[in-house]
Amino acid sequence: MISYFFRLLGSVLFVSWIVGTLVFFLIHLVPGDPVAVMLGDWASPADETVLREQLGLNLPIGVQYWKFISGVMQFDLGQSLFFQQPVSELIAERFPMTLQLAVMALLVAVLISFPVRTLGRFKGR
Image 1 (cartoon, rainbow, N blue to C red):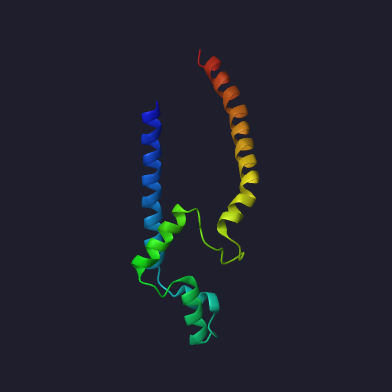
Image 2: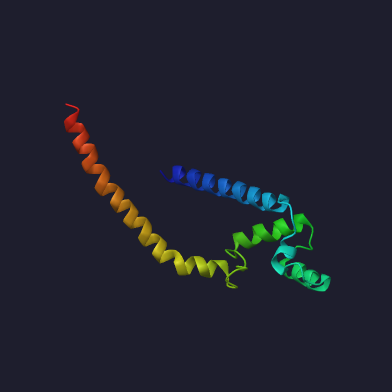
């Protein structure tokens, strides 16, 4: 049982790494400049350079990937550009309501599925 748990954990970590890597590189393949979009058409080249340095977009892609992976491994998910708050804080702040919603959805699914299945079993006979 313990070996199954560790195999399952290893699989989850491996798939998470693959998905994170794919998302990272796909985001870099999207056409357009995120700095230009964030600052708008009237931004000066100096402003674009400063924001590029702040976001680390001036670094080579390998260095950006390493910083991304090492940050994720340390549970540092970065700063939300929209909320100007650490992403891990945003997740922690919303986790209780998300858990409550998931539990309520599971409860509704169980309360609906058991009677439907039971009725289906008796009608089939």
